[in-house]
Length: 277
Image (cartoon, rainbow, N blue to C red; front, side, top):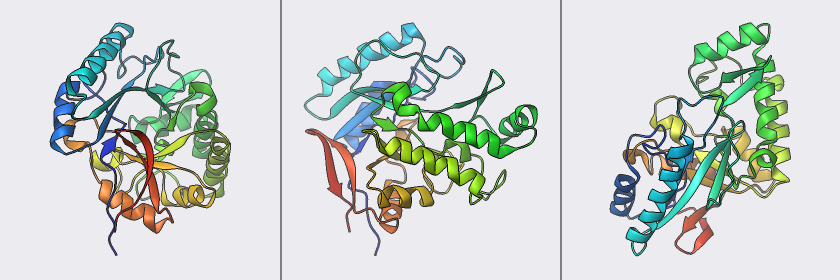
């Protein structure tokens, strides 16, 4: 049996206000063309420790104004939401957003902020410089921050839970079945399950060619299912062509992991919908 995604929405979307390729209006028009019910924008929050990829403070205000304009212009055709992806070390917003995605993009070691998702070599360099070659110290520190992301950001959605494996396809850097890796990861899930958060099943690394499967990994998806966690599929789209990338394949994977439904944003708000046969 092959299953299909019931989702006609995506809440993890980046635009040219941060590190995305398209203007918001281009994305809304593409979402309408695809027959999507809802499109959520999640610009990278201003992050003082690294401004290379995020919105500026001024750009954030322009972003908010543009999304509000699009809500008015296209409101009869699609539900548009103004969200933000707030990094663990990002500047906490003092204004309302429709939702917040909480994410960890850095590991702080010896006072230095080491980027998790730049490339494999940057991770290995940080491991040598700060962890005496012990990559599991690095991953442990990553999951320490992930465990705190809901408290730190007050997020609604947990972003790309195991982003630290982005460049580890095929175990290139470390063994993902090693207990030294798994223990802090499962502890992070347990901590987050005590919060009112949704875990995104993120296809962004698939669309960009880094992974063959979404975040979180299968073992974590099964663990979430066993413990009653809620999931939603997201594209982490950085261009309009990826708004629904690998959603059907991801729905099929979720069925294999024991899920029978996903949370999806509809015109009426969040709704739990069954995965389609």
